[in-house]
Image (cartoon, rainbow, N blue to C red; front, side):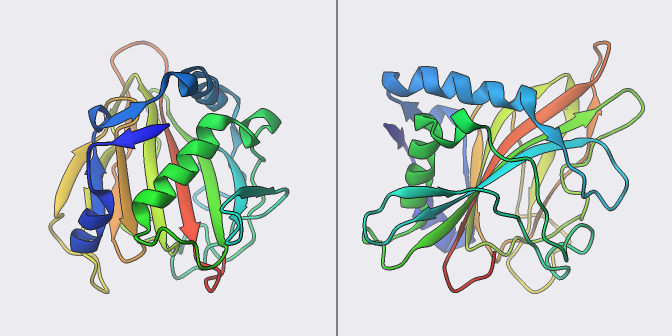
Length: 244
């Protein structure tokens, strides 16, 4: 079981995003071991082959689930691609992207399944699911090496086309940067961010709807020898009337 000391849905209704530090979450003991197994996945991601800027700094895996309106249960959809229009992602959009799939154990990991249901409950005000939803799970690592930064949002300030999105920090190691900027919900990004936040602790999280403009600053390797990385989990929630 996962609980949170925050009214995430109300915050999103007011400002289109909610910043939730890790200490606001609580996890039941039965999920702890599964959560640790899930975190190990980030050591086994594969290079993103669709980086139009030529960068090799992004590793990822992706999976898609359908939430049944009849049962409320999740069903994994094997081999599903991820699509964004060029309007939403002018750098990497415009094609069906087939990323490395979630690991077989990850697909059924109780921590991930519970988290999907938990996030969905925070983001939707209706207790009854009136129709099926599509839910995308993105495991992403951004790498920085000495002299070569990594860019979490190479497309710049942007908005996502999914109805809702949650982002959870999994790890940051030997890096600087990776600061989140949250702007308004107008047709163009605002010049001054409404909020600036650097996620530092495991499970520092934020939630937002599809109207929010946002970005993340590049990461650079830290003072210790070698490179560093920033690991995040993105979960997006798409109503059936919207393309994925």
